[in-house]
Length: 390
Image 1 (cartoon, rainbow, N blue to C red):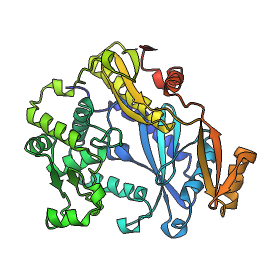
Image 2 (cartoon, helix red, strand yellow):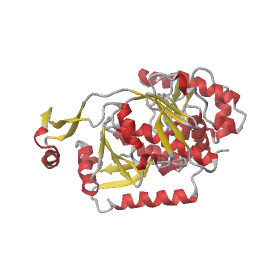
Image 3 (tube, helix red, strand yellow):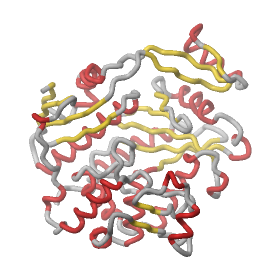
Image 4 (cartoon, helix red, strand yellow):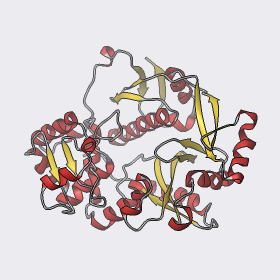
């Protein structure tokens, strides 16, 4: 079996980096910084380079404010390089010691009905999994299996199983083996309601947004009107069901499936030489590096349409970008924050619908040039001895 559990040394190192990061903000008032995601739930895999940090804002004080802009000012006091990631609510990335901290502003809510944004519910997901999940390593095993078979990742370009879905499945069925057994007998559609929010599937399906139904409906235990598996496509569901039917417990299922890179068209292909040493550790590091590259593409606005790897290549299908990007700042009503924004961008700042913005020239619009720039960055490729374009 491949190594699926982080070593004591890796856990200790990451814990120290995370603690130091949180300590940077211990004097902040009216907000609370705390860890989330797989790190908080202890379901992260070896080589993990992502840590989610939630920043809670008092609901009554901030529910009508742009908490992303408020958080940006707080972060800039401590760190020079803060990357804005645009979403349903802007959040941020900060790189410290090769770790990407994803810093997410949320309102401090007690129940899902108070949420002003989907992000506000995320801390409740963490709380639920920490309470219900008994076998954390079984989640790691499921994640590893899904990744090896290109079934992991809920992003639109992947349409696979998210980490949260993996955690719900293991907590619901109580073990990895029982998840495999349950899916081995599933059909082309599946309905699960772990928290029993509804008395029947018919009532549940009538209550959910039709656009979020899909072939796999997994009622979020925390949020009854949400399908946690909405991002799982029918194709990925069928592949996983077929995998579960054929699964015999051998290591081959955790090995990446071979692809003839010579037949790939319109892909960026990298020839890589893994580190010497134990194969399972080397491959785990290669997988972590691949995830890092994909994240770098996404963080910089590129759309990754497809990607994959074997023990000697990475490949990516990535779309090009426009030459400029519109970067929005705070609402004009927050004078102090607008002042900070203008001091950074000067005369380029404009106003639209009570919000300041600036049109910035992208450093990279060509994905191949961006990938070449990543190769030169030690923090990205320090785990690979040789990298070149094929």
